[in-house]
Length: 303
Image 1 (cartoon, helix red, strand yellow):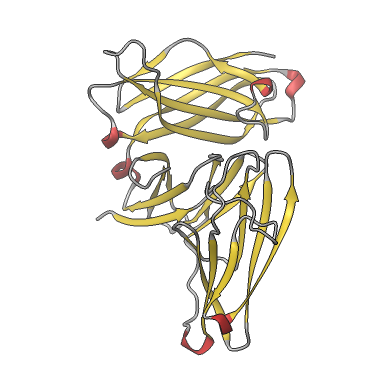
Image 2: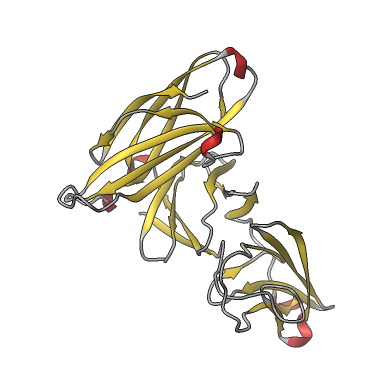
């Protein structure tokens, strides 16, 4: 039987200018008031990103339980890292972030974590699932908790399973992990193999691939395609010789029989996914696919 675990993570929340008097995005508070304190600080500042740290510090006899985020969402690590773009518009009402504490003598020993999310670089994030042998895992992402897209399938082996994903600036990011007895129960919309011819000047280097699946209505000529699913594949060797890597995209159950689908893909210098000036290979042509199906293609070199 398939089991569902829902994980909601607010990656970016467009809701507040820095709190008056603090210079911070959120207004930190605690519950109960005597349960502890919050140490808040600005970890780094850049033109397009401000990184803030909110550290929950329990009082004697208490332990940290969770954060409540405005307008919704939870976080279960005592250090909450919030990143936002100061160039965007935010409303001026105060937006609280609440650290919840509980009495230490009422808490059982914590169980092993199921999932962890961390920022990687300026435009990527890593989502890690602590897998169990004999269990298959499928990761979904959503911007609104209504429309979900599959981000990949992994077979559990007792080790960490890591997905590298692009940061979604200017909105919320929610993730859901679905568990099943085998990978076949979690078949993707399209999967396959992509290849390219590596060159000597890139010997010893590694790159990242960004593969995207697009959906469009063939009956409407003046409407653009919508993103159906995407995947970033990290640590691709780009030295001399023929190179291959596998990919998988989307949920076959979400496919619309009245829509058409096509794939785009590019390989970027490592750590620069999405930067058009960092592309070194691209998937040429219009690559339409049926869902579900298997697809294979070859990249062309740009530089």
